[in-house]
Length: 368
Length: 252
Image (cartoon, rainbow over all chains, first blue to last red; front, side, top):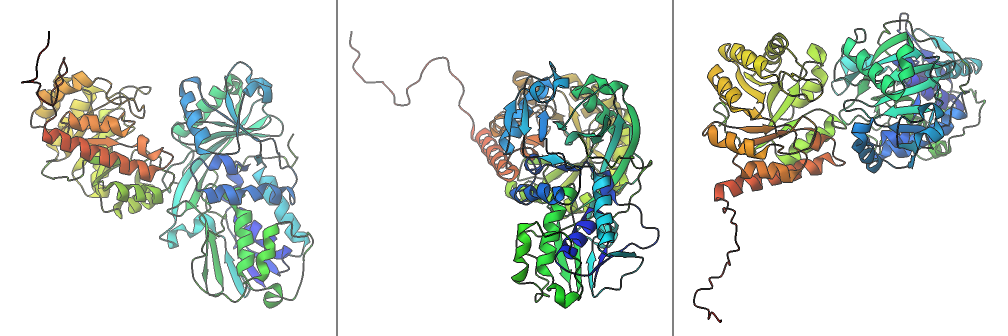
């Protein structure tokens, strides 16, 4: 039996990958566990755009995430990402292009007619996608439950997979919190069908379309562990960015605001650390949905074969992740604490933070 | 000497906008910078995770009041900085204009006076205006930090002649070019002109390879500093052959 602590994106991806590999798994959520921070995520699967400020590994490993999620949850929207800049910052677009791959120059209006006449040029990352974090996490959890995975308040497994995300920060001197703030808007006057990123001098600002003219606008990056409500400055900056993209956002209703802490290591990359029979997956930073599947795959490869952790098989879905095949290589017999060479790591979510308003209610429907 | 502290390396680095704290740390190491600036206004008391990483760098920390728009905000932030970092140094920024991030000289002088009389060693972010500079000195500042160009603009020394005048006017006062520097050549030029140091952030943090760019700036600043010390040749209107032509036959 393997106990997965935490039911955010890291924990649920890990549990899913473990069940698919044939392990017997339980989810552990002590009473009073706050909802995971990953529900506040943008849900962008943007391996190329993230390459602007992240090492190549994030792009390489994140690319598999789109298929991973598409195979397991409904509503993965593969419409790419459109990157824009206000006219006076258009030099930033050139810089962004030179710092990333997987893009081409476009006239934004050809992709999003609602932007007609507003931006002379943009960068299009056709290979990117987005999903709805709340419904994706719900689907993973429901699927696990159908496969017999129970949720318990305390672990009873022989192996512990600690995916507690920001809750681990107080005990881990290497982890630090990076505060993020987001808004959800209902904008009947605006019709956008794919993720829009607006280059912003201080943080990557994006607008993620959700069903029924709702939009998630995020997300600030503040080196702080403050879990208080969204600040006026953040709100002004996010709203001003949205307004820059389309003036129709001025009439939008603010449905929800949220604030969460991203757990991050000094290199802002996730990692898996092993301590005996405990594996700690953390440090997903702002790449939860992008990198949690890769971390989960790495985790499976580092655990003993299923027959050594349980006798039951619950696999329903075929492992569609090619890299899971590696599992046979060197699995179980490495109780070594050695930091994994490459960047294996997994991650996160479970969280401690509180949404300052009710979480955005998302429909479960599949976008567009 | 910056308030009694001698610095061998005359590059001062800002710590915002790096891809990760690890890359910031590598950039500090590659450049050999001895002073890093840190903002506090937005991060507040709960930004310890990041600040611990900065303390580990071994650099002298110059906290700043970036993001402050009033005297009161700046003074409060300076006090918080002194408690958090246990240093009297404060880079005083009082922003007057949200778009250009231009300093508000009136609030700046007032805040400088309050802080200097309270024992702070103030590094004021100012313009090239001579009178403002004099008022800051009179308020107790022993260093001035004129801008090269608006923060983050990368325009270099936008008013080079005015800066030259400022350098001449404040003989003996350490002057640091702060903000607006986009390329190592611009930093080298400032040092050739006799400025004592250059403070920058965006040009390094947002480079495609921040570590290499930090090193490039350090090299340029060292070159400019050495060139200034070596005595630059004056610019002439006419060519002057480096080999004397005296004694050559003059025909015709």
